Amino acid sequence: MSKLWGGRFEQTASEWVDEFGASIHFDAQLVLEDIEGSIAHVTMLGEQHILTADEVAQIVAGLKTLAKKAQASELTFNVFHEDIHMNLEALLHEEIGPVAGKIHTARSRNDQVATDMHLYLKRRVLETIEGIEAVQTALYDHAAQNVESIMPGYTHLQRAQPVSLAHHLLAYFWMLERDKERFSDSLKRIDMSPLGAGALAGTTFPIDRHRSAELLGFANVYPNSLDAVSDRDFILEFLSNASLLMMHLSRFCEELILWSSEEYRFITISDVFSTGSSMMPQKKNPDMAELVRGKSGRVVGNLMGLLTIMKGLPLAYNKDLQEDKEGMFDTVKTLQGSLSIMAGMIQDMTFHTDTMKQATERDFSNATELADYLTAKGMPFREAHEVTGTLVRYCIDHRLYLAELPIETYHAHSGLIEQDVYEALSPVTAVKRRNSYGGTGFDSVRTQLSEAKAKLPTNV
Ligand code: ARG
Image (cartoon, rainbow, N blue to C red; front, side):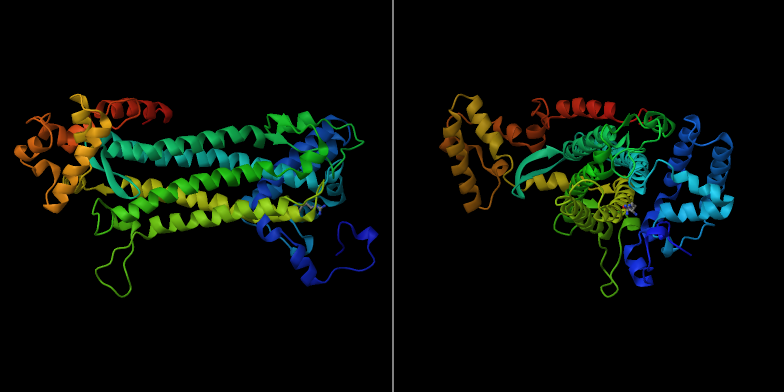
């Protein structure tokens, strides 16, 4: 067997060199996109009278046979042919004979591989958006049930002010909404055809790049052939959007891990998404949440990897670019897995709203309420802060909470405090009343819920 470029070479590469240079182990995943790209290219060549109608018919029929075989996992690829493009050309040759060699007229593997990846990523991004929506729906469903469930809100991981559980869950909903927007926005840069850019400089054949783009369903065509074959921004953007998404999922997982611990007891993660210990019989570990948190690391790593590959590359194509694929495939797989795990795990999760509520009653997260109460009665906020701080210290010294202080003690600190202070100190009141737009008050959260619902597909 000789290489496609055999004419120029005297010696053949050793097997281990072929092995090192090959990408077929991973770019075989692009088989259907590659065939699709070739069919569009050849169809356009026929329309432009660069190939005859008969040649086009033979090539397209051969490619369709290969697509069927690929779907039935009947194709065998060979490292000798290095990548998916040359493997398919060799297989097409076996299928239809020498006319297969015409497929590469006015095309290079450089525009071919870029086309494959644009086609591939466009589909994966649409699937990612659906995957995000499934997680959002799971969050939304719990939020809708828990507007009036209250829990401690934290800053510095210290109890700060009580919040509605729905409000906390919806915070993640909005992070995911931004992720969705970023992925959708990236589509216009993915939805571009590099096909027909040739190796780097275009071609002398009278091709119609807009037509092949149209046949492939691309909305646009790269206006510069050098850029078309060497641009990987669309993959970097995907990896960057994926990193942000994974970072959001990872933050939520961190909370789920904490909340499911004995220290919190805020939630129970269902058995389906937990594992036991091989040694400690009592253990039930939040492994899936930990894995999603962990996998965010590899996605960020994939982003760093490709950025580093790209930063020193002169125009146009360089073989370094073959290294763009594994991180992309790995990220796609990681996102698919993480999003389905998250959707299922959230759906099946039990929230112990009684424990959450009790937690808000055994802390000082209502101190701001007392300061606001005094401020509402005319005391300057700074002074109210001071009086409240003194009362909190008094409570700590006497092992009490603010709601347990007798009215006499309050009177001793400020004549403004009356019996109604106890109502103001109740955590439910504290949450219920925070109805500034975007706040945790029950009415505000209901408004937020309807805004969230409008972002979801209509079947929710
Ligand atoms: N397998 C190659 C890649 O993934 C295809 C393009 C090869 N082009 C070349 N001039 N060697 O990048």
